[in-house]
Each structure stands twice: as C-alpha cells, then as structure tokens.
View 1 (cartoon, rainbow, N blue to C red):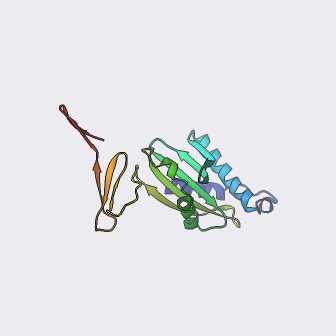
View 2: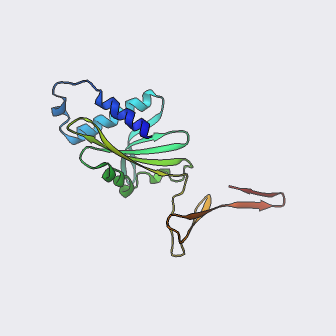
View 3: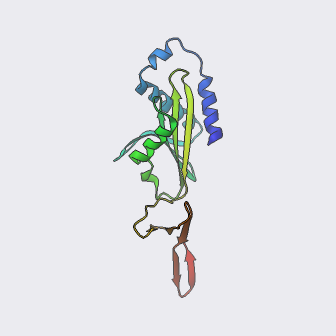
Length: 173
C-alpha cells in the first residue's frame, strides 16, 4: 500500500497546471470531492471495485475499495492531519460493516495539501481477518469463527479456532 500511495502522490503532483484551479478548489468540500473522484477514476480504470461516499447507519466513508483478500476504507481530508483522518474512520465506525467479511480490513487516512494540491501525508492501520473483538470483564471474547483470549502480556492474544467433532473425526474452522 505504501508503494501505491507514493504512486498516487506522484500522480497528483504531476497533474498539469490549470489557470484558476486553486481558486476553484478553495472550498474544502470541492477539494475532497475532487480527490475522491480522481481516486475513483484510477481504481476503476484498473478494474478494481471501488465506491465513494459509501453510506452506512454510522455515516459515509469517503471511499471503500474491495480486493480479493482485503477491503480498504479511505478517508480523505484537506484540513486535518492524516492521523486525525484515520481516527475519524474509527470514531464513526466506517470499517465496522466489513468486520465479519473474512477479508483483511485496512483503514487509510489521507491528508492532501490545499497549497500544493497533492497528497501531503497518509496513515495506514491494518486489521487482520476478523480479529475484531472487545473484551468483557473476564478478558475473554468469543465470536463466530474463533475465540480470542487476552493475556497479561501487552498485545499478546491467544486465538483458538472452533473445533467440530463427531464419530468421523474433527475439523477446525
């Protein structure tokens, strides 16, 4: 993704100068729409399934890209740091509709510069295949495909798959 973001940054920096364009882009909402539209064009020309202004009960994600093994949730802003933009994805829960999909979910916050009209910075946060959980008072959590147990070591989790047994044997899911 870092390479792809550098390519996008290079692409935007190489757009031809258009007289009066900065004035037209002065309204931040128009600028965000321009970047969404341009990203949409690039992804769709590469035959990648992409949608902008993806609505859910929690609001609208600026852009969602569906790949065979990963779903990317993008938020683009011209007036916030990339980290703040990424935090908006979490705060508003834009990635939640994809948590049981089975694919990796990658959240991307992008900041573009109104001065240079290019990508200024980006932050990426990857959530791996359905490891979405919240711990109860017993530091244990169950969900559809596996059990996640929090340990005393910060960041260390025990992940136990569900085991299905019968007279023929067993299998893991």
